[in-house]
Length: 179
Image (cartoon, rainbow, N blue to C red):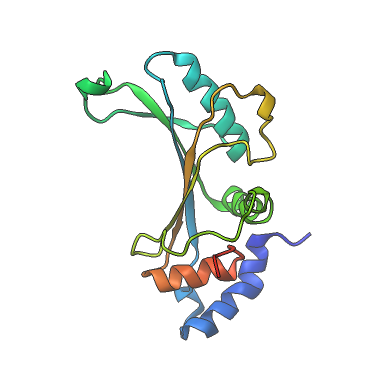
């Protein structure tokens, strides 16, 4: 079976080079990394919520998440600097391509009334961020075992210098954009 990474190197990179009018194949934008962030609700009140979210994010990404701490104290949220309030996973290499392929071919089509992802979620430098309100759209997660709905965001970091090249890269790799 031909995976996305080898298909990109053999076929998609050459097509992108022609489409973007680049002289060197090394100038073709590529995926750099995929960062998955999850802010955990009520992580301060009960540490078990953080452990449950760690298990969920670990199943979704196939990699153990790193705990993210609060950078500063906010009294109205009863938050102290250094409290563990979120989770971060950075995917690179084969795991990144496998996650991306699963995202575009399995997860996104599972949404009800899905017509594509928005084109406006680029950050100006070719990176794309996609938010999920719940993790149950991933087939690895059993909805019966989840007691709290937890959202997260997926940031796809590319080597593209602008949004036009980033859009062309993701479109060539199969990202279903809104028509």
